[in-house]
Amino acid sequence: MNVIKAEGLTRVFTGRPDRKNRLRRSRHVAVDHLDLSVEAGESVGYIGANGAGKSTTIKMLVGILVPTSGAVTTVGLHPLKQRRALARRIGVVFGQRSQLWWDLPVRESFSILSAIHGLSAADERTRTAELVDMLEMGEFLATPVRQLSLGQRMRAEVTAALLHRPELLILDEPTIGLDVLSKQRLREFLVTQRREHGTTLLLTTHDMGDVERLCDRILVVDHGRLAFDGTLDGLARTVGARRELVVDLATATGDLVDLDGAEHVRSESDGLRQRLAFDPQRTTAARVLAAVSERAEVLDLSITEPDIEDVVREIYRATRR
Amino acid sequence: MAEPEEQRRVRVLRAYRAVLASRARSQASHRASFRMDLVGAVLVGLIEFTEIWVLYSATDQIGGFTLAQIMLVFGLSDLAFSLADLVAGHCDNLPVYVRAGTLDVFFLRPQPLLAQLMTSDLSLRRIGRCLVGATSLTVGLVLNDIDWSVGTVGLLLLALVCGFVIFTAQFVTAAGLQFFLINGSEMTNAFVYGGRYAATQPAVVWPRALLVVFGVIFPVAFAAYLPVSTLLDMPGPLGLPTWLGWCAPVAALWAVTVAGLCWRWGLRHYRGAGG
Image 1 (cartoon, one colour):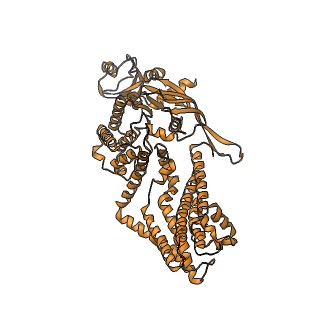
Image 2: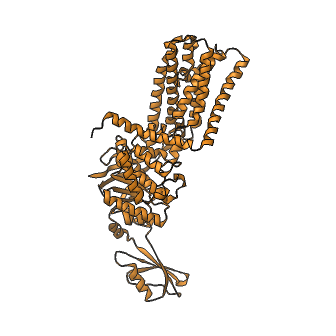
Image 3: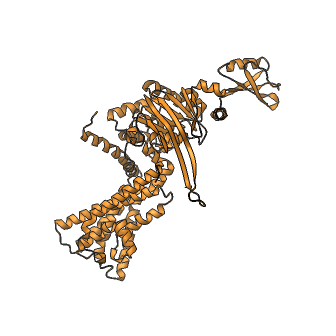
């Protein structure tokens, strides 16, 4: 079954009339004839530059915005005509806006939302306990939402979106601003949630880590059009999502060129720090490091993951040619 | 999976009750601040009444109404408005909800948006205003020579209910218009709070333009002035018949229709379906 099905989905924003020419209005095509289908159980990363049309698409999927043209169904329902039925079957986390009541303890927000979704008392107890346990929220259940750290609040937001066991969970920038540990914990939880309940995931993100660890399908949107639809491997093949190994060397060394499987990017501080790019599909960080160690003594090292902005830019360049 | 109607209704009400109860608890947890708000609301009500009292210290009658008679008008309209304010006053916050994204969150919940907006808050301090209105109404009922009957009691209740509906509808109308007028609350306040003020006065003294605005378009004259005229058997403005006060339900129905249209129109605009 298609959990999400969009055909020719288009959204045009018209500005206010021009002062000089009243008939002319500014037009901005946010989503441009987007065709999209997501199967039940898939985990889809929806990525693109700021203003590429990600949030607009999501708002049309959940019934906040009306499409200018085209059709969309979410879990088989019409988002505008069947908004209330849809709300019972999907969960949405907007990273920037809260579902919770800021002046109430976390626990109370959960019980209000349970009432809103019509969970029975017993169901509310088991479901809340399950989520609280998995997301380790016990210690701050009695804390007012306004006093939570960002990481804690995000866990509470995700719980709020999952209380009614939705078939589809939409996450808009779920890890934005979180520290490494919080990100990791949230990702692990989402993977488990998906495995145990078969929840379909659709997430927008600026974090390559989210995409790599959570998504088995990636959609890249550019100017409201789909620029890429495929797997992470496919994406890596298309844009060569390379990693960078940064090594600090004991002595100033000449540029480490001609290394097996790695390419020299640049040197800093007279060659004390060098950056080497490699493709994780073809070699490993350990092998590159071994090759470097043959030539110089390595004091310290770090690996940087490809920036999603770079990946997106590469895709844009490849598709616009 | 057919759910019995009774069970469904209980479930639906539980959602609203949960939100409202939490709002009430949250206010009760700040006792000192709540008491001050309450006292403040009573004071504002008293000051507004003082204004009327000062006017009457200069003259015995305004628009054919004595002070005792105008207390009925003031009490009835203020009570109706305060009750409406209690239930729908926070519709004023719509622009804040739009900016903070709270409104988008409402779309994600399986209740009608307007119902969610109305039950999103409950300002108990507004009970203070209700007290002022109720007191004035009671005093007015004692002071005036009223021919008590089932009819008069019915008329008073009808006026109170219709006044409440009319003022609630005003708040919703204003909220619907706010979708278009970001930062336009000054404009909508003019008729919501202006209407409240106008409703406490005898409409005979209004210029004709105001009669059209607050007698017909935003029919607050039906909230108190006209029913009280009927109650005291006084002629309506412009030679209109005395029984006009019984037409309050018509005015309420009209106000609700306007509110419904404005709200739907505003929501369409927000969702970008074109105005």
